[in-house]
Length: 210
Image 1: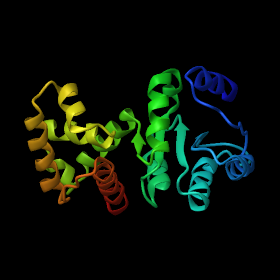
Image 2 (image 1 turned 45 degrees about the horizontal axis):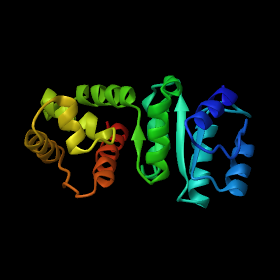
Image 3 (image 1 turned 180 degrees about the vertical axis):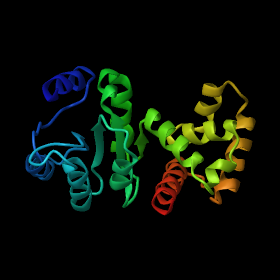
Image 4 (image 1 turned 45 degrees about the vertical axis):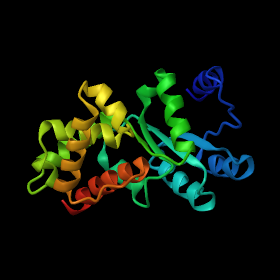
């Protein structure tokens, strides 16, 4: 899978500067090669548990400007919270099925390398559904239309892209976003990445408190 992914990324025009098969090699190569972004599995030798998340935090601690995208076949929200517990900027969390969608994978790598955050749409949908069903969750206050806007916003979409996706006017999207922030008790930020981060942080914190 590593070799196949490397070929796909190179065919898409990216420069793959190194390939690693275990936790320590990932750390060593990140230190020596100084990549813009690291793409790795959540599980790898030696224990096949959460080496990817440990490596992500280590890489970020040593070189914050390096983006990290984690690939997983697990939708377990505990992995998401473990990855994002110290912040969301420069992190991506994608399902392994996305390897087959090279355009989406490349966009995610570029977004994360630029300091943005990317969360797999199917994982966002799963987390929002889970949060909204929890007793007392503020997400339960949102209408279906507002939940859809929140999901698209958490995936990193701009207001314009949301309006195009939902086939509604830009003004309608802006009103729904304002309602989302009011109901969640979040102040609206002018920068999209900070706004997405606020939403993801809210979801993370609601998980640990709920």
